[in-house]
Image (cartoon, rainbow, N blue to C red):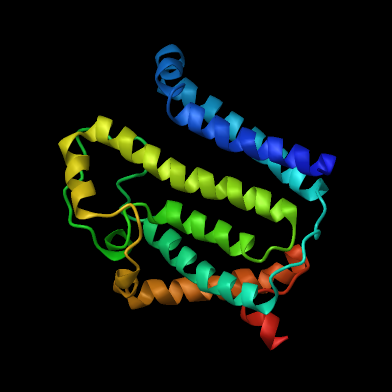
Length: 225
């Protein structure tokens, strides 16, 4: 394997591995030692350092060394990216899986919007974004980073369930019973017209910016010229 790809693989493993380690087995002893205020800067420093390494390694890796999946791949990427943005945007408000929940803030509301689709809309948004780049099959560097984000999102969501169950007890158990880890795609249009409009608008903006930032036309702009 190209040395640059090996470096990118190592950086991606470091990014995912440190996130899991600091979010789960290492968090309690470090919080006990440093306190919550001391732990959060350490967590952020490690996360940004690993992410920075991955970004630099990505830039140094070959940009296009796979045959690509052609226009079918671009259609699939589009069909994955719009729901990804829908789930991500919908997760930014009222998400009980956000960090630092306490027993004084139990999950008691009925799932609505994107939470009726999955209890992990942000994680699934990241996962679909990763898949949308993997299916294009244009470079190993994209596949490596895509797989790393996919693992981080989907394994991280499962680990998050277990941590929240320990923190919130019956409140989280009740929330799990009303929701689903796996997306219920049949309910995707229950997210609401305004959220769909926001997702499509953001998709148009991001795909328009894909050409000047990545050098490749994407989405509708690929066919509109």
